[in-house]
Length: 136
Image 1 (tube, rainbow, N blue to C red):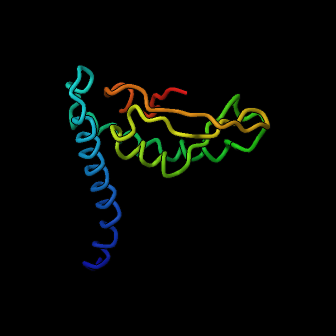
Image 2: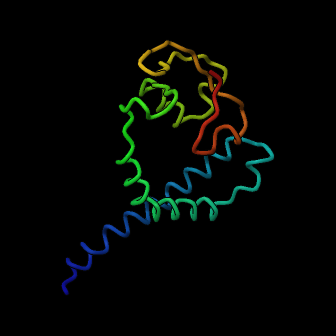
């Protein structure tokens, strides 16, 4: 095997490993924005293992996502449609939109309603999990 082949085969696992490490550090910095009871015990190695676990479960989650059809009438009781820029800002900076009401669309059966939501809470319990808390 030539050096070029070794580099090519090692590049993808190295990039995945680098991404997991960088994402863990980003998660840690995000948690450290909060100075509360729930964020004090968060450690970098725990976040790293959470990212590794997520990477291991990724094929199953992608298969599950492909089976879900959000356009089906029986897909859920209600859905909220966020503008992409609002959703991205909620994901990127958890403290930026605290206390600010934002317009979104509520989809129920075949009807659309304009509603307002705001980010809920200013501690890590409301902002650091996969399911963000908000007030409708």
